[in-house]
Length: 221
Ligand SMILES: [Fe+2]
Image (cartoon, rainbow, N blue to C red):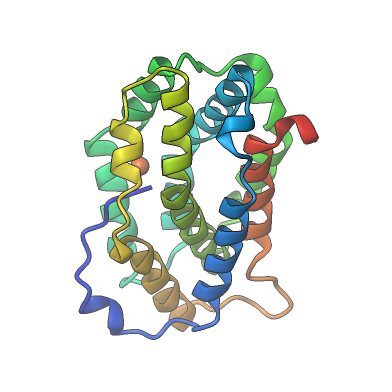
């Protein structure tokens, strides 16, 4: 969900765990492939997905990236996260998202917020543990998913009659350096502040996946 400015040359300086990014990519591909065909969705179903997505993202993305920055110890990783946050704030991505959901007539209701409340709480509390490696992998997954989800979200909004697509245009730009930047930060952190024994590096990824799936499949809960 960012537009990191990170040179590709820099990204090759530290080798990440080579199994992590393919595993995350596979999860994202599974999730995107399973999305319901927009043609089968009612107007209310479309509105609900946009509203629940907005309810989660508008107030939490910057907060969660900030939590990840606070947890991170690697001096090489911090500038990557700071650049991410800089762009979020400078370009006011929450405002961009607000314009997007208002134009799609999908302002989140209390019911929309409550539909994802438990999963949202789980992710919040998880990131509050400030476990850097787990948080960085979770945010790398988040970035990658959002980028792949954007064409689908844009299609839902278009079917709602909206033409306001700045948010999805900005976040759907498939610049490989963005996700690579977070995996570079992860590799740097793993080198100086590795995850303790017995901990599941995918713990936050699984929690966030549950939240992202309930955004789409709220009625199936
Ligand atoms: Fe963003």
